[in-house]
Structure formats: C-alpha cells, structure tokens
Image 1 (spheres, rainbow, N blue to C red):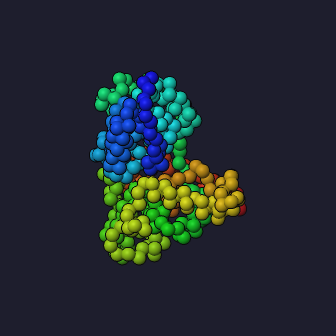
Image 2 (image 1 turned 120 degrees about the vertical axis):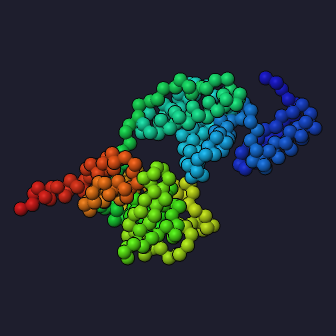
Image 3 (image 1 turned 90 degrees about the vertical axis):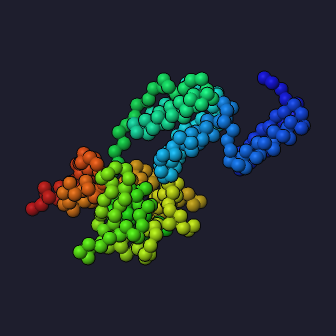
Length: 342
C-alpha cells in the first residue's frame, strides 16, 4: 500500500472525508478540490467512489425519463434495501458473495421486494461496467432467495372507524381521504387539483389524471365527507407548509405519523413517547391498503365489478377480481349472521 507523508481529515454534511498527499502544497490543493466538488454536489466518478454515491448518480443520470415521483421511489427503495447495507463499500471492492449475502437477508419477504433488490443491484453494476468503472457485474449470477406472495388486505370495520377518526384530524386529511374514499393511488392523490373537480347533474366528480395506464385516467365520485374538507378553489388539493406538492418521502412520513396516531387511539402502550409493541394497527397495512379498502367497500355496496374496474383505474379486470374475491373477517361475520338467522 502506498504511504503518504501528509493526511487531513474533515467533515462535510455529516460525513467524514480523508485527504492524503506527499506534500503540504499537494494536500492543500486536494483539500480545496474535494471541498469544491462537495459544495457543487459533484460526485467524482471513478472506481474508488462508494456504491452509495454511484447508485445515486445512476438514478439521477439514467432515470430521467421517469417522473420525479418515480425517481424518488426508486432511490428510496435503493437506499433502504441496498445502500444501507453495502453502500459504504468502494464500488471496486464489492464482490459477488457480498451481493448474494445482501439479497439472502431478505429471504421470507415478498417476492416483489426480492425481485426489486435483484433488479436494482444488477442495474447499478451493469451501468458501472458500461462506464468502465469495474470489469464485471458482481450481481450477475446471484440467486434469489425464497419469497412470499404479499397480498394486501383491506382495513377491518374497526380499523376503518379509527382510521377515519384520526385521519380527519391529520394535517394531510385530504390526501388520505382521496385514497380511502376515491380509490386514488398515492401518487395520483398528491397531484389532484381543484380544477379536476367537475359537476354533472348536481353531482361532484374528480378527474383522476392517472398515468400508469390508459385506464388510470378516470372520473370518480366525490363523497360529501371529502367535499366538506375542500376549502380552496384553485391549485393542488394538498400542499405542504412551503406550498409544494407532497413528495414520495413526505407521503411516507405522513403515513407513519398517522399510523402512530391510530395506534395511540387504539390503546397502544407508550414509554418515553415511544410506542411499545404489540401495535394494535396492523404492521401489514400501508397507504395502499386504503385504496384496497375502497375497492372492497365498492363490493360491499353492490357496485358491479366492471364499474369497480373503471373506478380503480385497473387496465385488467383480473386485478379488480383479485380484490373482489378476497374474504374478510367482516364478511365471514355477516355470513355467520345470515346462516344463523332465525
């Protein structure tokens, strides 16, 4: 290993950096150059850069055709499942066994999550090979561990009651109600404007300008409960305190804060302001469960499956049918009452 006479360490934006040189003059020049690069948010592209820096650069450079929201989701997933584990290693030092060990950690998780980790690992390293930073892709021959089918479930009647009570008090009540009462996808809910509200025969509808497929562009009924929350006239229905739309990270944070409120409402124990397991509100629920619940509620109200497909913005009726055929504890209770009715 080459030895240097002079070394300088410094911290920038919470991260420690090391500069090495053979003279004080060279050390000073390297320090100034590194500092300028950091201030300009410029990542020096070479095989010595960390996997984390390269992953962020890849998303920034090669995902330009995706929406900002899609890029945020892509990067958040990469940070959570890949960068958090091996992102500190230099790109050139990552070996196949490290990639295999990483993906093995997610055995037992959903097949979707495992597939996404596999796909993103290969994307990152293929681009590194294409750019001449490494000679081969260390994730090319890794095997996917056993995963599970992750089926979303709807909220139970009790969970819905507490959800509505807490959501209506939340800063982003409109956002959550757009998903729960109108079946919007989270990314769709964040982009709806007052100009998207239309009136036909004295009935209000929301024009959901979804982009996931042609079927995602649709009109859905605007329930009175949600209509009563809308006090503006122009612009986005939901904005932050800085008057920006809800980013992917903001939406995740909003859901976490709402789940905390719901757990407290449902009697979860606390110690020093921290919730203590078990959590009454299911860990298996997510923001998307609200949309799933919307579809389940359509079925309970007798809406035919073709209309439900349109309202959900599903391109394939099989997607709607998968939800319509789910059996919930509530429906089992109803059938018990019907069977045992005298």
